[in-house]
Image 1: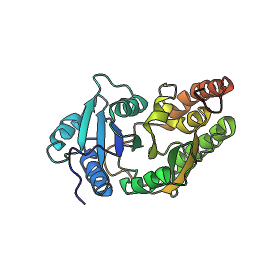
Image 2 (image 1 turned 90 degrees about the horizontal axis):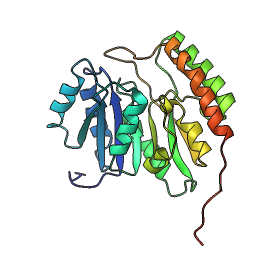
Image 3 (image 1 turned 30 degrees about the vertical axis):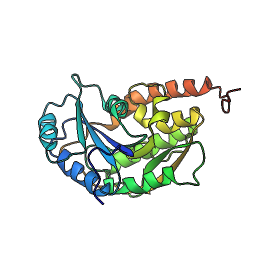
Length: 247
């Protein structure tokens, strides 16, 4: 099925990118293949890269009619990239992917279908990817397992793998969440805080082919302590009306 270029998208794929010039074209090709039968747009956000990422993305626009490119004037991090993309998105449903190619775009349709199925809970707002077989170094997997365990106990967010960049959620729900740097790791907890339901699904995970990770175990640990305390405080101040009726 051919999707007209002026058809309003059902899903916007948001991809923050920092120094990923070697990965973005392959990823865009995979997104286009995965969503060939769904009205979609893909939004790549260049986070003030110091390599050729922005130039590569700009050149790609002639080959990918559903591609939009945003460029931060100053490096602002992955969470700000996600938010910039979501704010610009035209679709009611958002899918996020890491730009390193380790998330598989072929998993997006299944998560999209799970979120939008007719018998889904009324309040379902997110389906998060859960890396069934993570392809990373032993040190990174151990650190991630420890961090996920601590976070899950403290925040009761039901998530075994918040580090997975592949998530599908409603734009409206995301924009209701309080924004802060590194929010992308706390979306499940904050969705629950707002009274939404969340679900998870196993997804593929792949080795990085080009470039290098922008995160280290120490770097994640350094910010996670403050972030955990902040999200715990937000949860402690939660009061829900359990619905609003106009009378």
